[in-house]
Image (cartoon, rainbow, N blue to C red; front, side):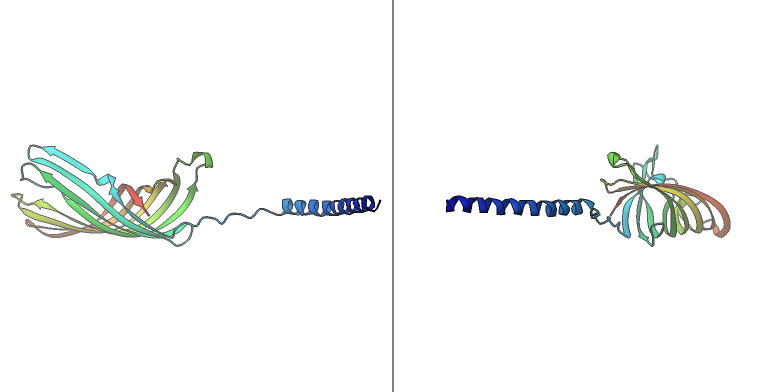
Length: 224
């Protein structure tokens, strides 16, 4: 009899605990569901980009009776983001020439230039999550000051050396495409500017003149 009453007492206590805990548990579940989900911290892009690649618009290959000439245009640069829309950049480029076969005659000019500029990115296009293989695109306007150093053989007998130095100021419109899964950056731009051309050669004195010039550039970089 005593055992039976004890069992009933324990059952009543257990049932009361469940009934009391039920609303508390339900309220806790509702509060968890109502609480906003914590957002994952946004991934911050690097402020400094380092780039190395080719200036595709200067690539050249020539084959003729005097031999073969290959011009490999090397380009390296860096870009520092001031804000999400403005950045400072600098680059150095050189046209490296390889030659084979017979020698003689005039060689193509080899250019080396350095540039500093300011970019304004006015449009950003991002692919959908389901299309991550597509590139990110950014359009920009740029103001760039550069200086070009070029040299080649010339003169009456093709044995002299002709040098030119060309400082210039350009305004560019351009677009960049980069991939989330590949360390590649494609850059295309076109623009107009003014340049001061100075030439020095074996058959002429220094000549300087002011010209209006246009540029179209295509570059493919490995970026970091």
